[in-house]
Length: 417
Image (cartoon, rainbow, N blue to C red; front, side):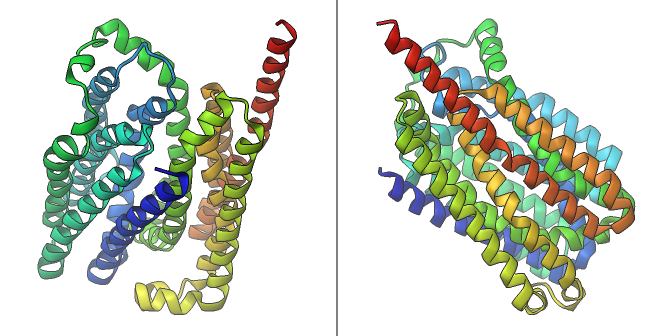
């Protein structure tokens, strides 16, 4: 499929997926108020970084991998093995941060959904590597529709967040087992080839190869969630619920950026490998302009109709925080740009630079959160999020550095002939 078709398919599927995830947050806000949204937000803040760390960004590595040392079987086996320590760590975090049995159950149920998502994510790499993103899109829509329908039906009738999330997680696991594994990924898998490369040494070699970008993804996830965790510890679950509900609009915008990033990842890797600078920089420049433009539109929207949107979507409890909403709109510009560039840097073939960029973003987020959140609360958390985006946007300098290195290597190669 062409880049345009892949983008349209992923935009459609991500739109359905993110829209239904947003519906879940709206149901929580309408039914359980800021307290239930805060519990769900805390669960995501704890489980997402753990999942990302143990994922080791294996999907990205497989899609951009041009060698023959590791079959898909090596990637798949490593992903499944990584779920074991991830599960134990999340259980420990649930007892450390969970304030009561209900919050702990919410964290564990969200973790089950995240483990299923991690498995599906690895299977998505198969069609993505051959630019068949429509298969990925169909899976995402099926998963979102089934799981959200189960959650909405139970929560609307019972207001029981634990029972509703249990059915929600069951929907994610069911789609993994009966659709992703048996229908979506089956045409791309060669079971005979996958039996090779499953030794301990091969798995360790792949883990070592993927570790820098895995650590980079983990550091980025921690950087994003540090303001939330500090806000919960400083002001409580209800305040976190307000912040989580308002920042979900950024997640919706990031959905479009993520779609764009997923669509350009393989073409960028090919352009870089072929030293096609015109195409490489054209893709990055267009994507960066789209990301910044989305941020400007979002910010203007929060200024003009922010209070009305919050009242219609979440209710009067959230509408009084329109000033915070404007701040979130303003900081969305660097966040969107940094998110897009985060997809571009791995395509330039340097996972080590990805790690440097992520660590810099983590330091910026942590430092800003330590200073601003205890004093300004949710407003400080928003500005800390913005500092993360600014730091992440500096990846453009690393991309330029990596391309100059690539051009220098090409010139030396030509002169030696």
